Amino acid sequence: MNFGAIIIGDEILSGKRVDRHFVKMAELLSARGLRLAWVEYLGDERLRIAATLRRSLAAGDVVFSFGGIGNTPDDHTRQAAAAALDVDLVLHPDAEREIRARFGAEITDVRLLLGTFPRGVDIIPNPFNRIPGFRVRDHHFLPGFPQMAHPMAEWALDTFYAGLFHYRAMVEKAFLLTGANAYESALLDLMERIVAEFPTLRLFSLPSMSDEGQRRYLELGVEGDPVVVDQAMAAMREEVERRGIDWQWRS
Image 1 (tube, rainbow, N blue to C red):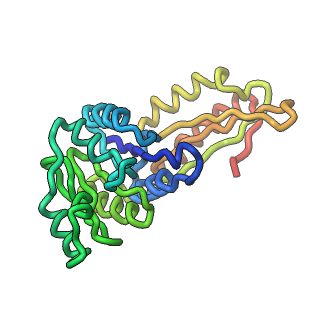
Image 2: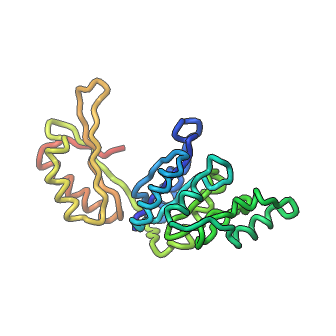
Image 3: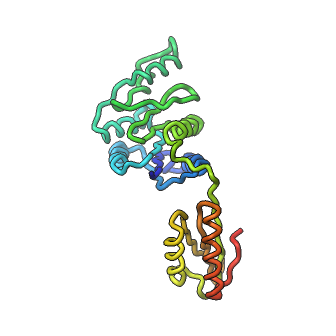
């Protein structure tokens, strides 16, 4: 099952605010033996958000969407989600109870708009101020404020996806290769062999060069279960040495 994140807000795309959701989602998933498959950044544009949601809903991914569920004119996520689902917006009874409990005698129709969600969704509780988010078809719609959204995302992961968790720590190890044959095309056959022999691992190769452009490097490594990682690294080391390529452990 793939996990994705949609991060919404003109203020992020303009650079007025720095996104904190991507790093946090990667952290939350990594702690549970999972990882993000994709991330998309979108501005406050209803049609584009709706088109993105139609695509992700059709893909069947688990998606966490951050931002745009308020009730101001620049908040479009609730409406875009309703359009993508082809349903109308209604005041969710559970959301209404939470909002009324939050504001008490100070409740207003404007504040109740915060609980107007696409028909048929479930709410995601907000431990910060009781203004909920919502979820439908493995899509989770959360506020843009990290102090609200991140505990809500963690709750959703632990409530709905605990069966997918792999708490055994994943590790990443890599060689830093140098020399005339330390480039990707020369090592493609080795990479394909490692991928075929160790299909549970994620292989990566990252070429780089010195600031002067005179020395080339290739970072070649794998990520996954510690035992399998060590087996793959031993196989790569043997072949790298056979080819006379200089190597050192990546620090």
